Length: 441
Image (cartoon, rainbow, N blue to C red; front, side):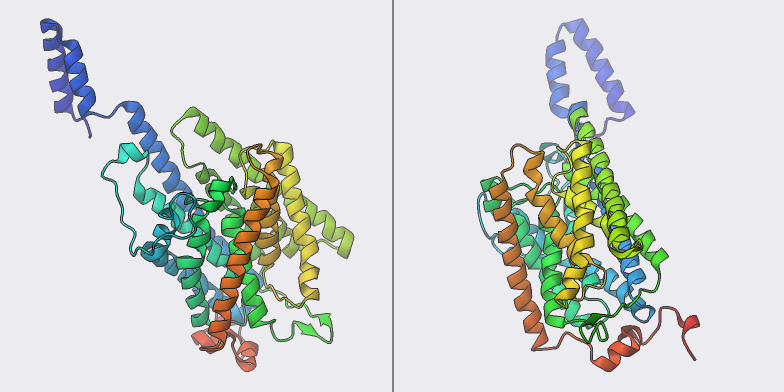
């Protein structure tokens, strides 16, 4: 309830009358019953503001993913990547509204699967009781789901068809992601065991990574990537674009991790959000520096593409627990993430798993590392429970994703033919080019 000037005047008159009549306590009780206390209102406002601002920042990560992927694919596929990123974000929003949000948050305490209720219904009838606007919470959760789908886009770039990819995005964002997220964030069985994943190293990033790995195995590598047992480099179109995209993702992570505090209405919450910002930033810094050093040692030259993923690897690694580590521990966690990214790239190539943007090392493997190491700084978490959570979510997401990819492959087909792939998906699927002025006549 808003207190306007007339109400203030009325309350003042009532107070003066009460003093004269000796009935101050009764008037005070009546006013307190009608108007929320300042503390309740301010807590509600700041909590809601955290959700909204953090959600906007995380939404901007969609631009970061798009620019990173555009920079790391060849120019003949740049427009297709742009289309996929704006389309997957939009599909994620609709699927979270239709099914996803209810699947996450109606699972029941210790449960495995929520009933399939259609349509999320906003309820702001008693906002002070909840402590935040339900619309703000929905928006914040929705942009998280879109992040997981973006991971798949980069791995399978340059050879997957548009519509089968978007069909998988709908399944991932509407069902696969929400079901496994409900096990922890919805109060399901992993939460009951004591599993801890603060902002989603496993629930968001490894989930996207497992889905991407399953897709890469089904779709196969790009034409010309592996020739006569050797790895042929297929350079991207714009490393400056990829670098800018990485900086945008880095910025977005402050909303991703900071917003996951879920509250900003007290001094303690404000301090926690600030600490999360610092730890998130330092983990990314460590990932960059370690990736630089390792690529210099291993390849005699610093590899910018791996360094960019070193930043992302550090960010993913700290996401499972950005609050409790000291700054030194955050540096260590991020440094290991940078090392994982650097060392995993040649391993994937050895198995001929073509990951165009390096999302599998950065999101899947670093997500596992970040989740397992949570007990290092959080005494309430247990190593064996963390491992159980990682395995359970990994098996579920990978198996279901693999079945979905295989179903798509043997029905509508998922891969562009070799001629279309050589010409580029921009021409063959969209009928346009991202950079027509540079095209050969």
